[in-house]
Length: 225
Image 1 (tube, helix red, strand yellow):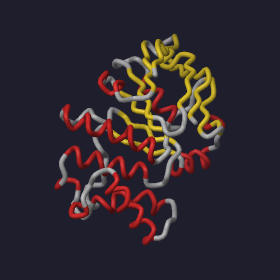
Image 2 (tube, rainbow, N blue to C red):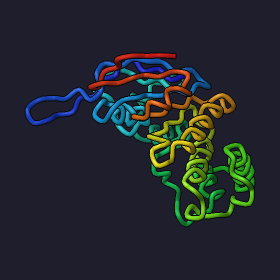
Image 3 (cartoon, rainbow, N blue to C red):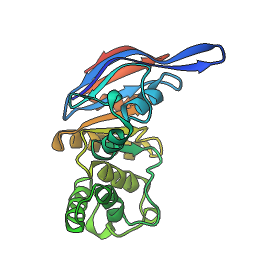
Image 4 (cartoon, one colour):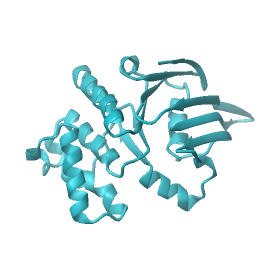
């Protein structure tokens, strides 16, 4: 369960302060694919940083599995980002000199899993996201954009996170491939029982999301499910 309670984030701008995130509260249950939608400047990127523990809110609480991540010390925050959260980026962010399966295995290596376990889980995840075995040993440059995003999603799932944050996951994809990726995220939320939150300006993503939260000027202006 992801629970955001009265979260605000202020930034100083000259002699005044800007409320990039203004008193937002929302909940997303386990196994749910949700979308946070808003135009540039709506506060969605700041909220993503807060959810990913890349920044701390000025006030409020962010609970993941009933644990307030805003109160974690630096060392525990590192553990949280490594073991409890997965990131999917618009630009894929795969390691270029590693193969598809090596990219998926990498977070598990940091987590201390044995190589046999890493390889077995990476292979299962790659198949689950639709990467065929013949492409396991291809480097990112030999994969299409859609395939690279599938590998990135498998990598995000590798450490069995409680929360996956997808930042504009269809931004670099054509519309047809983007729809396939969104449907994949929706299905993985259920099969992996993971909360998946896509932060996007793409209104079409909300059609497949179980919950949609719309931001404007740092405020939550509507919720639909």
